[in-house]
Length: 519
Ligand code: ME8
Image 1: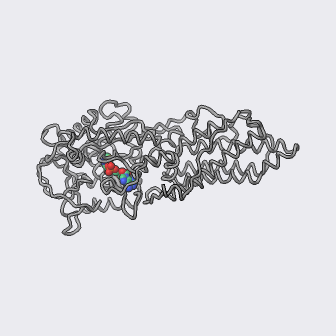
Image 2: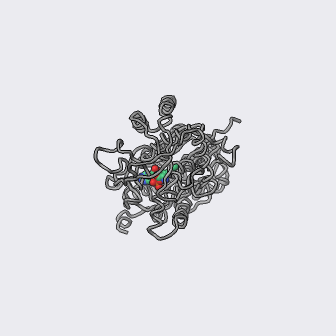
Image 3: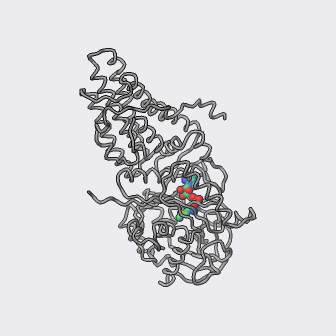
C-alpha cells in the first residue's frame, strides 16, 4: 500500500479578547473541511486550532473587568471550544498559549536564537497598535499619520527597554526561499506584497516587552515578557510535540498549510520564517491568506463590534447549513458578505430543494414500489451510463478542487451531480414504469441507480456537511460511515442490493424568508 501522505493544517489561534464571530467561524470551517477531505482520502492528518492568550490587549481587557487575565481568558476560551463543538470542528488538538507545554517551547526558541547571537538588547521607541499587537516604526507609516496601516486605528507611542531579533540578517535567505518556493505564499497577490515589504528594508523586530507582564518570561531576563506574536506563532510547533513528542514532531513538521486571514499573512510569511531560520528549523510548506467577511464594506471585527454571532445561526439553522453557506458563497482568497436573506436562499434552494428533496423522493419510491428494500439492478440504458459518468467525472473535479483548496468549485461539481440525479428521475419517470409489469426490472434498476448516486453524494459531501452526510448514510440503510474512504465513492455499484432503507425526516426544512428576516 502506498505510504500515507501527512497533512498538518492550522488555523490562527484566536485572541480570547471577546467571543468569536462568523469571520473566525469561516476560517475554522475551511480548515475543518480540508482536514476532513484529507482524512477521507486516507492521508494522515493533524488539524490544530487554539487560543492566543497573552499580550497587552488581553491584559487590558481583564483589567477593565477587574479580574485576573487568566480568569478572563478561561471564560472566553470555554466559549471557543463550545462553538467548535457545535460546528462539528474535528480538530486533533486545541492549544492554549498559557499552557506549560507551550511556555517551555517559547522559552526554548528565544534561548536558541539568543545563543546564536540573533537577539540583542536595546530600546524600542516607536508606535504600537494594541488591537493588532503590532509594532510600526515611523518609516512604515503614511506620512505624519499615526494610525495602523493594517486596521486604521490610532497607534500608541511606546518607549521601553526591549530585546530585538535581527530580521535583516535573514532578508536575503528569505528572498531566496520565496523565489525557490513560489507556492509558499498564497494567493499570488499576497506574495508580491510580502516581497515588496521585505525589499523596502526589514527593521529588527522587538521580541520582548517590559511595560506589562502578561506573557511568557524571557528566560535570561524575567523582567521582560516575550512579544505576543513570537509567543503565538510558536504554537504550531508546541502542539505537535516539538519538545515532548519527537516522533510526532518529525512526522508533521514542516506544516502543510497555515490558513490565516489576509491581515496576518505578514506575521506568518516574514516573521515566522525568520524565527524558524534563526532556530534552524524547516519552514512550513504554505501560508494561505483568506479574505474577510465584510459588513457594509468594512471588515467584521471583534474590536469594531460589527459582528454576526454564529451561535444563534447554528441553533436556528444547524451547523451544516452555516458551513455550507460560508464555503459555497466565498471563493477562497476573496472577501465576501454575509446576509441572512442569501443564507436562507441557499438553504431553501440548494439544501432543502436540491439535496433534501432528492433523498426524500428516492426513499419514498423505494418504500412505495419495493417495500423499503433496495432492489438489484439488471438493465442498462444510455441514461444510466450518463448518470454513472456524471458521478465519476464529478469525483475527479471534486478531488482536484479540494486539493487546490477551491472548495466552492468542489461544491459546484457535487451539486452538478445532485442536479443530474434529480434530472434522471424526471427522465426515467419511475411512477410511469411502476404502472407496467413489463417495466418492473427497469424500475428496479432506476431505483438502484438513484440510491447509488446518493451513496456517492453522501461520501463526497461529508467534509462540507458532516452531520448531513451521516444522516443520508443512515437513511440509505448503511452503517459504519466513519470508516468509509473516498475510494468507496469511486466504485459505482458498491451499494449492497437487498439493503433495507431507513427513511427519516427531511434533511433540511424550508424557511419563510419574510418571517425569518423579521424575527
Ligand atoms: O490575529 N472575516 O487573532 P484574531 C474572515 N491571535 N476572517 C476573519 C475575520 C473576518 N471579518 N475576522 C477575523 C489573531 N477573522 C492572532 C493570531 S496566529 C499565530 C495568531 C479570522 O482573534 C481570520 O482568520 O484577531 C483572521 O486572520 C483571524 O480570525 C484573526 O483572529
